[in-house]
Length: 127
Image (cartoon, rainbow, N blue to C red; front, side, top):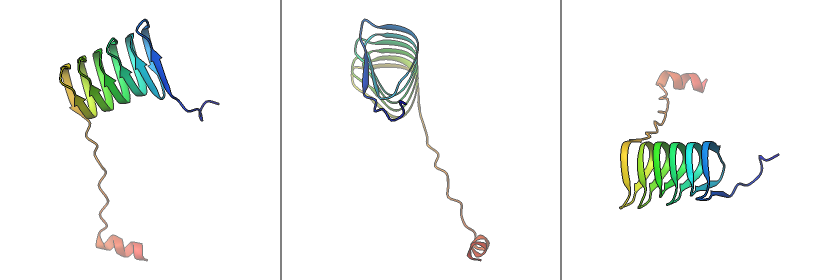
């Protein structure tokens, strides 16, 4: 029923406080307090936000406070971000004025090697 639906963005205002887990499609902007886990496509933690937990998303932008674990393909820590976390990333941008403490690990994509065709294998393929 909802599988063909296009997802846009959702905003959790600064008056919002949540203890638990969120799974979302599209863009999620958080300006409130989260104690828990977020899994999504694009997650933005605004300047007034505070999160303690685990954050997994393709694209992550942090301008507020974060403590916990972060895993993303593209992560940007804006000026003013305060992060105490284990960060696993493919692309990481850290702006001047941000504060980061913790462990930072780059995801290394191991591309499978092509199987080499030996001369005797080539003869078998030709038959």
